[in-house]
Structure formats: C-alpha cells, structure tokens
Length: 573
Ligand SMILES: Cc1cc2nc3c(=O)[nH]c(=O)nc-3n(C[C@H](O)[C@H](O)[C@H](O)COP(=O)(O)OP(=O)(O)OC[C@H]3O[C@@H](n4cnc5c(N)ncnc54)[C@H](O)[C@@H]3O)c2cc1C
Image (cartoon, rainbow, N blue to C red; front, side, top):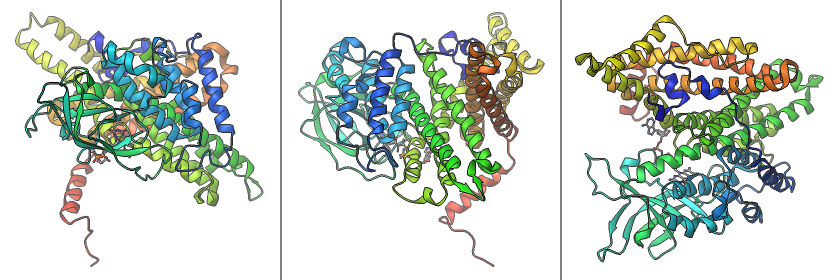
C-alpha cells in the first residue's frame, strides 16, 4: 500500500494496524465551533415548533423550513467563505447533518443532495468561473441543486448509463438526450449535475461518462413528484432530457471524467448519510428510552425488564460506535487523509443499518402505539429505510468495500510474482511482502494507542485485523480475480471490515474520553465501548469464521432453481 492511499481499512486488509490514525480523536476546530452552535440552535428552534408526536406533516416540509435553513447557511456549510458559504469542514458538517437527521430525515436528504453531492461535484471538478457564477447562489440556497445519475434501466451499474450527450452540430455546447429517475430535489432544483455518456453505446466497452451542469432550458422537463414509502417531505422526480441544449461551459470537469466525479461526490456524501443516520438513531433511542421508563406493565416500568434492557443496551452501544466512526472519518478527511472511500462506505452501511435497527426496536418497545400512524414511530422506520439504498445500496457498498480492500494486497501478489522472476531488482518488494507475511504467520500486530482499561477490546481489534489480513491473503491465493464472483464471501469480508472500523473508532474515542476525564468521569463511555467491543467481536468472529460456508453452493443452487420455477416452491406432497 502506498503512502498516497493511506487508509485504516486498506491497511487492515494487509493485516496492518495503522494506529497513528487512531491516536488523536478529532474535535471540532475551535474557530468553527461557534458557527456550528449557531446552526444547531436554529435547528433546535425549528424542532421545538410543533414537534410532538411527529416533527412535521408527513409528505411536506413545514412552511418556512427551507427558508430558515437557507438563512442559517445550511446549503453552503462547506462552500468557502469567499463564495458566501460557511467554510466549515466535514466534521462540522457532520454535526449539522446529525441534527438535521434528528429533526427530519426528509429535510436532511434535501440539504444533503444539494450540499453533499451536487456542491461537492462542483467544488471538486468545477472551473473557477463556474464556481464564481454558481456557488454564491447555491450557498444562499437561492439555487437548489440536484444530482442525477440513476435511470430507469440502471441505478447501481453506472456503466449502463443510456443518457448521452453529443457535441452540438454548430460546435457551441452539447445536446443531451435521456431519462433520469428519482432525482432528489428534482422539483425544487435550478441546477442539476447530470451524468451522460459521451462515447457511443458499445456493449463490450465501458462508456466514458461526463458530468454536465444542467439549468432550466428548453428540452429539460421535470416530472411530477413521485410518492415514496418514507422521506416524503423530500422532492423526488424524474428528469427528461429531450434535445436539451447546454452551453460549452456546462461541462463539469474534463470530458470522460464523469465517473470519477460521481465516485468522489458519493464518497463524500456518504459521511453525511451516516451523520443523518446518527441523528435518526439517537432520536429513536431517546424516544424508546422515554417510553420504556414511562410505560408500566406488570407493576413496573418496561425499562425494568431484562429483554427491554438488552434491546436498549445493544442499540446504545451501536449508536455510540456510529457516533465514533462518523466523527473519526469526518475528522480524518478534514486532516487531509487522501483516501477515505472505504471508511465512508463503512460508515454509510453501519449507519443506515443501525438507524433502521434502532427505529424498528423503538417501535417494538412502543408496543401497539408503535404501529399506529401519526405517532412518529412507524414513520421513523419508513424514513430510515431510504438510507439502505441511497448513495449506493448496502449490497453494492459491501462488494465495493471487500473488493477495494483486497485490491492492494492482490496487486502486491502480482508484484511479488514479478519480483520473483527478477529477484535482485525486486528485493524491496519481496522484503515488504515477507514482512507482511511474517506478521500474519507470527501473530498479530499490536495496538499501543488504546487506553490500558480497553485492553480486552484492543486485543479483539488486533485479532480481527490479523484475521482480516490472513483471510484476504488466503482468498486471493485461492480465487485470484475470480473472487469478484464470490459475493457471499465478499459480504462477510465486508461485514468484518465494517465492524473493524467501528471498533477502531470506538477505541479511539473512548481512549480520548479516559485521558480527558479519567476512569470515573468516562465510566459510561467505558461501559458502552465494552458492550460494543463484545458485539463487534462476535460479529467479526462469525463473519471470518464462516467465510467459506459449505452451504453457499447449496444456496446458489436453491436460488437458481427458484428462479427457474418463477419463485414458486414445490407443491405439497
Ligand atoms: C427516494 C430516493 C431518492 C433518490 N435520489 C437519487 C438522486 O438524487 N440521484 C440519483 O442519481 N439517484 C437517486 N436515487 C436512486 C438510488 O440511488 C438507486 O435507487 C440506488 O442506487 C439503487 O439502484 P436501483 O434502484 O436501480 O437498484 P438496482 O441496481 O436494480 O438494485 C436492486 C437490488 O439488487 C441489488 N444489487 C444490484 N447490483 C448488485 C450487485 N452487483 N451485487 C449485489 N447486489 C446487487 C441491490 O443492492 C438492490 O438490493 C434515489 C432513489 C430513491 C428511492
């Protein structure tokens, strides 16, 4: 692994603990804290107005909310001050998105599609002229933005994009044709980042995708609002491009660079997704706890029964871990860590699944009232489901985490094979490889930055990373590039990696709390870290222990047969 791709999880796939990345648990920079406090106060005020039992009418954002968040600067949190934005970092932005998720996930998604996806794309790939023209109105929220990648025929597979762009015959700009689907903010946006192929359709070649800045113009038709299961206050529409002409300066980034622009924006957007999931999960946990204390059954509060306690404790441990991983990922991204794609994907998967589990658990603790509309419990579950698929479905994210994580050890093996043919030239490669092999053979790497009171959890992490490195090594030797087809194994490898990042972040934060407040002052953190450590340890052991599950072939067979039978089971004898 090169220095340029330094990432905790990529190192973990080599069996290496990049512990320097855990040594300083991030804090909000003091100069950004007052701005964050001010924004959070605005959101708290919005929430206070008519919050019980549901924060808003389901299906629309309350009147005045979009204006209020625009005035507070939420549409330009990370836009530099020179363009009228708040100039905050990702950690500050994550705090704000946590508060948005707590207030109303539909509002959070509205702000996120604008600021996490569209604005990021423009800030990363736009020219100075494009940025000067567009960013000020985007920061004010006068010009809401959207991000249109998905199409009727493809969501996860960007290579299947059919929307295409051609150079206008007079050479002045491009003409776009196509149909985009489920565009968040579609009904409100005045700027859409549209991804279109700029090479001819060819089944055997990946298309060159290009990003365009599309503004209202003839041929750009926004469809009606699409009814959804949850996050109903967010606008979701289709977008038709019918000979839509855009000027030459609508090209965002270089021709053919659209895929990378989308990937980078999504990497960044996933930190926001995880942060809003944290807000959703914290609110649900608080409501569930209030209910468990106030509702009595069999002469005592629900919170006095161990089955309820188990539920509350496990959810609290997970939410604590989610808070740790969001904070650490955002902080490392702010500190200039060049590659946080695996960590942000891990946060997104862990965050969305935690938010769904906690909202569902809250609904169960609420009992019958949980299943009644208008009380907020069922709506929280419906809203939380969206994040399982937004910005990359969790299945696709798991495949991405596992395959990207194994790419570097895989490449190392190719380099080793080459070096063995030229042993003198390849000496460096061989000794690096020998070192990492020796680590996996001789035992685990040590983690020295964790507080001594976290010894047990630190050992769990050391063993887990050793296990992940050894598993990656073994799988690559056994399957080579064919590992990409072994999706059940990839899912388990990714599960282990996701828990590893959650555990590492938990250790980093809890160590910081212990250093700051001592054992007495950080007793709750210590208990939560211990509780999460056990959960994560069991999950990692299960994932790595069952990597080559003998039942996998049988599952493939059963699924094939089911597909052949049109989904029908055999008849009763
Ligand atoms: C409310 C909402 C808002 C949205 N906002 C936007 C937006 O603003 N911009 C935008 O571009 N898109 C947006 N989307 C689209 C969203 O990103 C896609 O729905 C998502 O990426 C999944 O794509 P798909 O629906 O085509 O599912 P598919 O790709 O058809 O996937 C269906 C199922 O198959 C699984 N699957 C697919 N491929 C694989 C694989 N290789 N391995 C294993 N499993 C696989 C998936 O995980 C999923 O479970 C939005 C969607 C919704 C519902």
